[in-house]
Image (cartoon, rainbow, N blue to C red):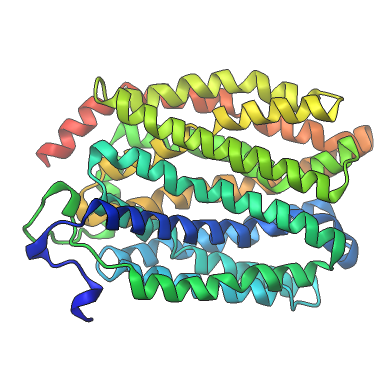
Length: 432
């Protein structure tokens, strides 16, 4: 490893400009992550028709085929990241998932496509845990929620590009061409990460100069499971992610089936709602958490509890409106509010964890949230579509999404319960 690869512990600081550069590079990687993950949702219809499978099969493909291996691979990769060079791990993962996205476009049957999506999931497991750990070392606690909010924009901007570009490609090309075209940029970005991102010392943003020994997986789990606020945080986030991933993966089909909109038109509006609405919600959530938590740390979870409850009527109006314009308007408001919890979730997870368990803590959180949300969410919607179809036909997807959206009620309650234990858990962290 060369001198330029790392920030020396003796020079325990990075400039604000370079810290922001790293944040935007990691954001760009996360954008590519969600382009490669989300583009499949645009082509559910054509792939289903070509391979002759059901909505249940497609729900499993966009859900558990990706999420199961993403979550399984995430923890050992995160253990590596808590010991090794996080920048290099991200570059390797980006190379793998981009190559497997290209390979998805070369598949000839449903089984091959499922295997390719497994490969995408394994590669993407090397993305967020080390990225969260890097952001925590580049940004101090009082600026961390906003940094996490900006990083979280990758979900929405990547999904927006997938919807917009995918809608155009669906209207003008076949689905295989889309996967090949959208998978290639990640191979270039992997080189940028490897050559320009430097590995910081652990605890740099908190001015920790002494070496910190990594914890074992058992120690990490024991510590986190002892934090009641963390348990409620993970449970609530998992329930909200069922709705989030259900809408992300089936929203495109919803507007096609229920409102009869054209592919390009759906792509444009999904890009606007998910890209702008999601980014606005994530940034607002991060900004407000940074401000309010200075008064009382309970606001890290109190705010998500409130905005989640406020979002639920807009979810119902979005899904039950008969006019596409009204549905899109309510969808936008719902999406802003329902994504304000995301930076609080990631920031609180990092703030509760000790220095040498941060990547592993991120992987454990993502293990549960993605297995439940990215795995069960889309799969449940697909299953419910087939179950409701005899009674509701093409409108079955409306009732499927409304069913999964109702999980937000319990999610809000769990966030509130988390807020009541935060002060004690932060005090315990500081004395351990």
